[in-house]
Figure 1 (cartoon, rainbow, N blue to C red):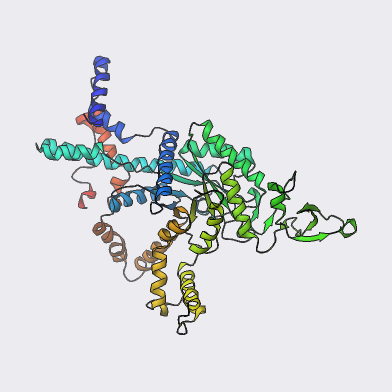
Figure 2 (figure 1 turned 60 degrees about the vertical axis):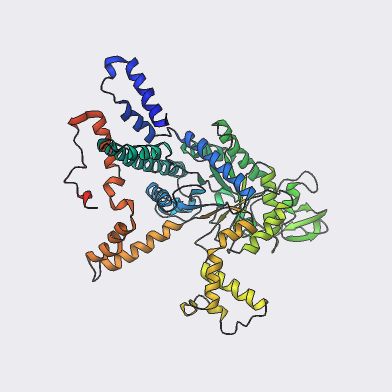
Length: 531
């Protein structure tokens, strides 16, 4: 007997046990509602998706072609449409996640209005968005299953038993739209206790993976902007511990922590690390400080700070802001130390924020990390902050020049020009962009590829195109030709926007609750039937 039929039978038994008081309850209707609401709490989701992610991590360890991907979200509807599209085009959600971007929450969800990515937005907006995303994903389940239930009823009414069996199989093997969300907690929005409290709210909302960065919480900057300030390892590890404790307290024993390092582009620290012995983590952190080696007290001016590092007295360079500088060129070494330390102290995955998408650069760091932690894996930001076209054209230009190929027909300073779009160099660059994710998964240990802000840009682009046409000479044809006709011909589900908003699910419920007395919206005169 199928799981669906099992549920019907179980509820039928409950109805019988409760006698006439439950006579109006239809066991099949209740079983349908139960199937449409598989996850009752965010913790149900976190536990379910953590297992998916752990299995995917193991699959990647065995075969690097099995990398995973996600796109960033700033609204539940956006996340829902991504998963509906994934199921439509690929038939499965396997190895496809969602990413919750702190940048997008700051820019699009804060009550203060649009903000830069500096942790100034309300931290409660983070768990609220996780909950919203899963609300929409669960509604996508309810909508799709509702369609299957109507197909089943139609097949039974027509006496088509083979069709009914086929639809029943689809119901029993239904794949949920609920997938893992990698959620950005920024630098923790405060100290380790604040990090723990927020992590708990995020996990309770459904997050199975939390990404945290090694910047100073109150100095936090976007990873692709200047002015980033890192913290000593002990501070960061305390926050990793805080997140792990939050997972364990809530019973998500296999929750995932993504430790992000911004050290490659961060040239500043707010504090000198505590060190108890030469060569400990604090001493290693301080060894990267830029400054002057001094011989004694005569070299110290009023207010100077002196630290003993590498057996010598070092007077670190301090800015007017009170921040200390790291040695120029030390970023890669600091990244490697950060990553090894994080993995050795509780993190599961790494995130290395880079200034360009370059497989060789990432692989150089990962190979050093893997000398100590062989199964080190990365989450990587395929960021819209990179000019992908220019970067890859420059990479091809440089590679060809190094190999002795004649590049005299190209001006490296003008490679972004559309004049180069049809050239051999541009086509090779585009091919490298196309294979970047597979190449980086194979050569640079990248388990998960994401684009942080895709729908921020797609919304702007599509809105610009619509505004230009609709308010211009095209008028209403600008919408019909540019939007609706494409929706119809590409089978975009939200062309039936009433259905997407839950109208049909609501009609089903009214019929369950009120029987023939139900006043339903999906009748003959519903204009949605035009589609």
